[in-house]
Length: 260
Image 1 (cartoon, rainbow, N blue to C red):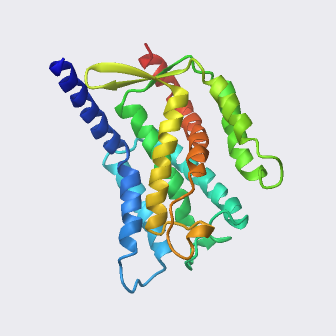
Image 2 (tube, helix red, strand yellow):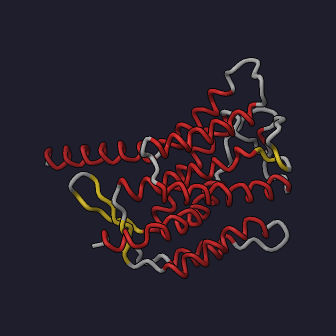
Image 3 (tube, helix red, strand yellow):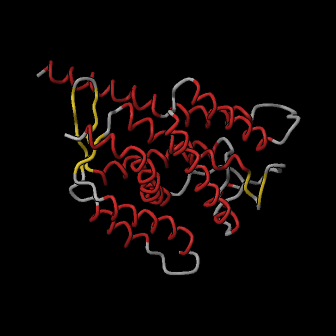
């Protein structure tokens, strides 16, 4: 019994270490944002400095092997999709970037896309470091629903909010889909929908940290930081499907080889 507990704790520790490696880009990005608030008398706008930092971080990630060439392409796509998302949502007043900057379009600093690129980097690295594989995956249905999730985050400002309907449809589409991953010498599996929920929760935690260090501000945070609404946890659990679909398409041939 004691041996089983020890093995379980050791595997959990290994899992945690790999997760930290997967989060390297995101941790470095949020850490840089936090550090920028401590720099006095900056010669350039903080948001502009963060854009340069994000570019250098992406180049460094490529050079040191955090990200492969394929990963960089996916991450760039996440950056572009995220920037479009920011442009629309900021104009609708969902959140704001209150500081001035030169590299700012329609109220959105260009560094804002790196926040989504960080999520893309995490998924890409997790795919590689955990040796992810999928069984029972319905690529077309999941892809169509991911597009629907993305579009609904815009249209719910004018049309009925379909997120609960999309969540139910996504749950049905991923029923029976398993994510296989390796920790040490052992192969494990997890329902795909559960991975979305868990990643969504930790993204909500990360969002609290990011808003605390001034990455952006929700309306209720403009007069002082307050926790991000718990409803954003559900929003991230849905939105992660978009990143997952993008990464899966790049890794499709590889995960077919690694699936049991």
